Image (cartoon, rainbow, N blue to C red):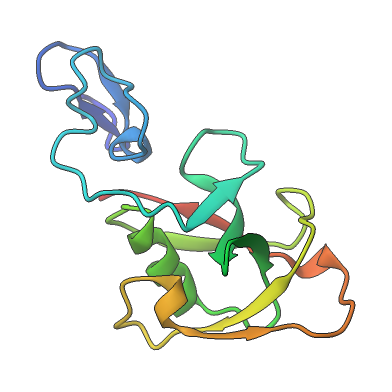
Length: 144
């Protein structure tokens, strides 16, 4: 592939964007873009993103209910843990509040140290007051 942001499917000459590898969706006809990927965790998700899988508002499943990650005091360390949990191997980028619409339900303040394999292993504190969802975390995850 002539573009550094593209990667070749194994069994044909098709090149697809690198972020589409290990995004839990078969973009290559032979499925090679999903072969050998880390299994994707089902207890966090990215929603309301334009492209399936690699970007959106971060939601966390805690005690059987989906809630939003609280953006104030959110860190790039948290972003790396979340993207790793989703099966991505590269760069993690936090996106401005409201980029991927606003969530509903519980908001969770997340504090990771960076050695965690799951957001749920980080320090999670429920935001108790009725904070509006204007500060929901947006996230973009990439593969290397």
